[in-house]
Structure formats: structure tokens, C-alpha cells
Amino acid sequence: MSDETRSKANQMYADAHQEQYKNHDPPAALAIYRAIIAAHPEEKEAGYSRGQIRNIASKVVPKQELLDAELELALSHLA
Image (tube, rainbow, N blue to C red; front, side):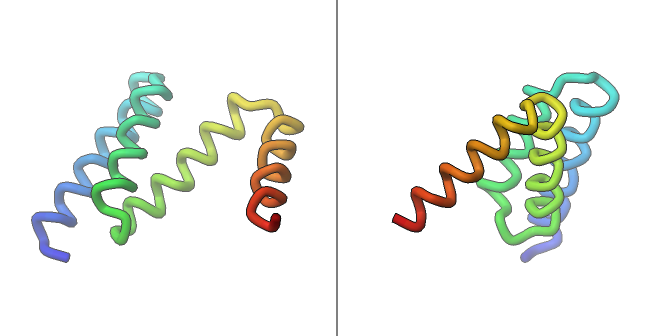
């Protein structure tokens, strides 16, 4: 990847981090994390974004609901 691509992914991640932790706006952060994954799937920031999405989900979605969704997803891919 070019330095410009890395720089763009890094800036987007910094923006998402600010939305999540400084502005306390998880929906805005999630939108940016999603955009990072879509635009820069091979960059390290995409991996970090996946982790942050899981962190947000674990804070706002009840544990049993997360488990049920993961189970249904796994079962649907095994069918």
C-alpha cells in the first residue's frame, strides 16, 4: 500500500477514535470504522476497527443477545 493510503486509513481511525472516546458518539465512530474496513481492508487500521466494533457491541448489546446472534450466524454458515 502507498504511504498516502496508510495515511488516509490512519487519519480515519484517529477520527473514529475521537468520535468514540472524546465525543462519546458511538454511531459516528461505527460509521467511520465501517468505512475504514470497506476502503482499506488490508490495512492494520481495518483490524483495529473490527476490534473497536466488537468493543462497542459488547457494551451496548446484552451478552445473551450477542451469543444468540453469533450462534445463529455460525449455524447458518454450517447449513
